[in-house]
Length: 126
Image 1 (cartoon, rainbow, N blue to C red):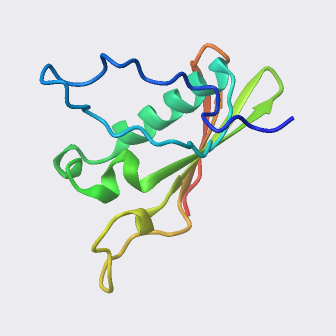
Image 2: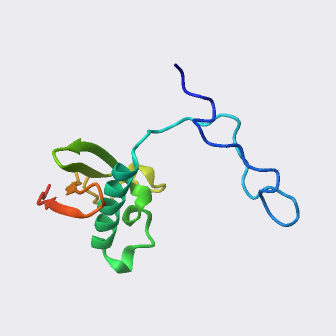
């Protein structure tokens, strides 16, 4: 039993796109799935990600290293909910070079309910 080339995502309808008939997005022939998660796992990871983003300095939220682009989420099923780890990935931002003082061993850990409610945040300071 293999993965379908389109990963179960329906093909776009011919009417998709702009009013001029030009597609707004170039749909690939093959899609490489990153993961398959159940809905509650997505709610849990979203809640944790939003909490991390809300803790970043508001004045710096337009800088890549303080956006979701510089984060990755690892989600696992725990007793009664989900355990979500949010890792900082400054290497996902362009232009990060010598002189940048960004913690590479940085993460946030959360226990989250299947409904997406944060039950507890693990207090970790790298």
